[in-house]
Amino acid sequence: MAQWPAKALSLAAAILLFLFHNYSNLSERFVNVPLRAVFADGFTAGQPIPKRVRVSVRGKEKNLATFSEGDIEAIADFTPFNKKGTYRVPIQIKRKGGAEDPNLMEFKVEPIELVVPIEAKVQKRVEVSPRFKGSLLSGYELVQYYITPSLILVEGPQTRIERLYSIPTEEIDLTGKKENFTLEVRIAKNDPLLSFPNGDTVEFRGFVQETTILKTFDSVSIVVLDLRSDLRLSQDLPKGTIRVQGAQNVLDSIGGEQIRLVVEGKGITHPGTYTLPVRPDTPAGLLILRFEPTSVTLKVDRVE
Image (tube, rainbow, N blue to C red; front, side, top):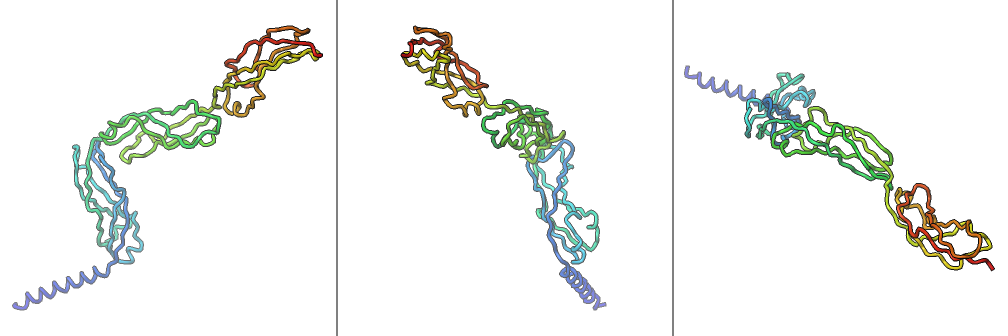
C-alpha cells in the first residue's frame, strides 16, 4: 500500500507528459473573422464596433489544412441589456459547418471581450442633399434638379439621429454634361452606425441649359444702308452701344464687327439734313435689352 502514492504520481506524470506531447504536436493558424454584435430589440451600438477579430485555431495539421475562416463566427451578445448604458461582454467563437471536427482543439480570440455603449435605436426622415464633382461642358449650367424621394428614412442610435437634419448622396459626376440627365445615386454611407430601412438609393434628375449672360458692346459703329451712290455723308457718325442677353457660348464667339447699328438710307433722295431712327443689327439668338442712340442726324451732300 505504501507504493500507491508513488504509483499515482507516476501515472499523473505520464498523463501530463502524454497530453503535453500531443499538445506540442498541434499546429496553430490565425484567421480574421467578421464580428457580429447582436442587441435587444429597439437598441443598438452608440459607437462603431470592430468589423473583424483575430482568432487563433490550434489543432492537427491535416485538419487545419481544410479549415477556413468561414467555418466559425464571432459573436458579441448584448441582448440581455435593454437600458441605455455601457456594457462589457465576452466575444464568443461558435463553430459551424466543417468546423465541428472534434480534433480542432482550441479557439482563442483577440480581443476577448467587447465594451460598447448602448442606446435606443430610432428612425427619422431627413432631407437628401446632392454632392457634385466635375464641371458641365463650358457654357452650360445646372439650372434645376429634383431628388426622388427628397426625404429618406434613416435608422440609428438616438444621439446621432437627433442631430441629423440632412444626409448627402455619393458624388454626382457633372463632367462634360450639356443635356438633361437622370441617374440612380446612392446615399453616402459616412457613418457606419446609420442604416436605411427602405433602401439607400434615390433618383436624381438634372436640368441643363446653356449659360445665359448679359454683355454690353461699346464703340459700336453706325452704318447707313442703301444710300444712293450720288450722295454721301458730310460728317462722321458717332459711336453707339448695345446691351444684349444670350448664351455664353454664342457671345464668346461674336466679334465686334458682327455688332452694329444701322440706319436705312434708301429714302434719302437729295442733299440735306435728316434725323432717322437707328436699329441694332446683331447675330440671331441674342435678346436686345438696350441700344443707344435710338436716332441719329445725318448731313448729306452730293458727291462731287
